[in-house]
Length: 127
Image (cartoon, rainbow, N blue to C red; front, top):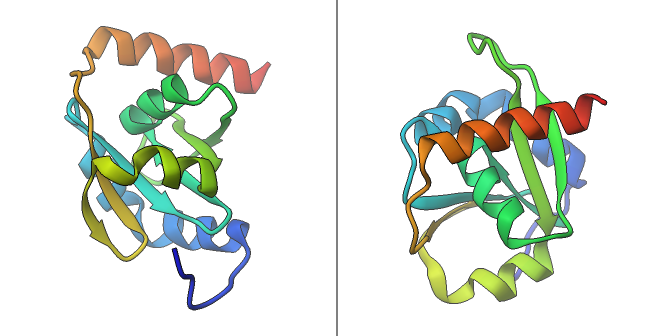
């Protein structure tokens, strides 16, 4: 993948959350079929339900919590190195739009499984 501009991953992530958190959370609200990924440079990031799926696929992933306006719970993000994600997901990407990728997933995510993962992820980061 060719990156035309270089910006540190942390700044790219900060801009993504600041400028697109509403769209990201809207995509995740009832998401039980896809993994929504965001290219933040050296990493690909996923939020909420997509983060649950991503963390299940990659044992080496980083979990991060965010507070965003109008959201009463922590938002959970999982990130994986870009080179690993790109090689793993290459054949499953069904939409590529700038930094955003929509990836097909063959299994539905049950709400109970997601809620359990979310609670466990928040506890693991806070402790």
